[in-house]
Length: 96
Length: 486
Ligand SMILES: [Zn+2]
Image (spheres, each protein chain N blue to C red):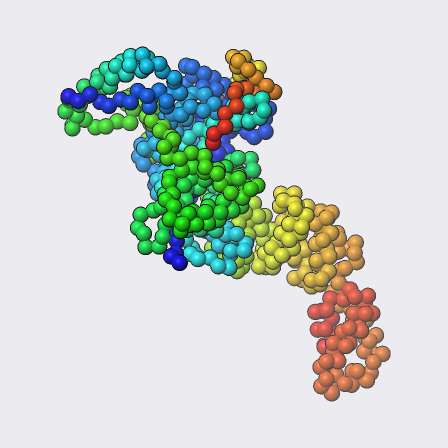
């Protein structure tokens, strides 16, 4: 069967990862195997199987709309490498 | 010159006014100190799991019902993958193929058009078709400055409805009316406070231009950074002009995203199709699908009267004009205020109360740039004032003076009338004395009247009025005089 197409450079770009050529080759082959494994499904006749919306046959798990406080600002920022006036601080990013 | 057709679709994001966030119990609110309303879930910390907020689901279904949408039997959640610091999980939990609401439409109310365009509505009664409404989570708020980008995650996880229209809008004026009408309906439904200044309502515009006769739509250009409904109108006007000129020059427009700069009044390219996002949607394994039947059943009784239904009822029940009914129902709180004023004493004609609300109260509030909720004139007090005019206790001119004082002091009509000595004398005993006085002092006028000169009665009424210090009730007075002279 045909090998599913995999554009490792596009995947890397979407994931904001800078891969070396060596990494790109290695991950391409690893991810290719994952896709190949998934394509095993194509060998089964699923025409009689009803599609489901989730792997678990469970529905309607929800909570009432009640609020309670969570972290203090100090707790929220405890792991922030940089902070300023109670906010997470990072290199300037301007897009949308 | 060939004609060009403009096609516009809007994507509106509306924050729901629930108590807690979409997937965690953190409070939802505007104006809290940065990062004081977060938890592991809305900060996207590893291992934290989301739980659906039922009320957010119900409010979205309710909005859908008000807009005539249908709800599929099963609805589910998906992940939209992208990397941006306002979303630390690196995906936004949203709905892809099974949203809560499908189809439906937004009716464009006449009074929702910009004031200067209300006289020339091209498609009266138009309903703009909707594609869908789905429920998702809002992202954090980023502020860019010299030191870098600062992030506040209080907003992250706030329930957010995305209302997507079909490319069914023809002009900037229709887009304006769409947003005003939609906002009105969301507020009526109590699902969102929909304040654009607070970011509770946000709007992206998709716009394309094509020559008349061409079937397929022109290149879709998305506009972002539209911070007010007026800015949406300005941006569309600008963009239609820019795109039309480009097409006329023979330029080929490409699918792209542009940012509106309201100060400069122009759009700038943000990204072209080549860097269009590829979100790689997939079903969220952490959230289970929902069956909507029981939700629909619960929400049905919660659907309130829509603005257009209320408007029709006001015309019918209160005999006000279509325009006045439109003004009174343009704001849910105003409609309630008016109905409370009418209900205070059903004997007072509703139409008269409507006139006072529209011409005096709204005018005065507008001059004072004050909101209805801060009005010192209360509904019952207005009813009382109108009752005084109707019974002839005070004249219309006096009533306006009384209203002015009610508006600035909050005192009741009766108290002000007493204080100003406006009370008209309707007590016939007191009036009779004045009449007798005038009749006996002017025998020649009495003779003229008896000879058939009816105008004399006006003169005599004036005399009695003068004698009473202007306090005589003119209606009672002229009846009295006529009886005495007969
Ligand atoms: Zn939270």
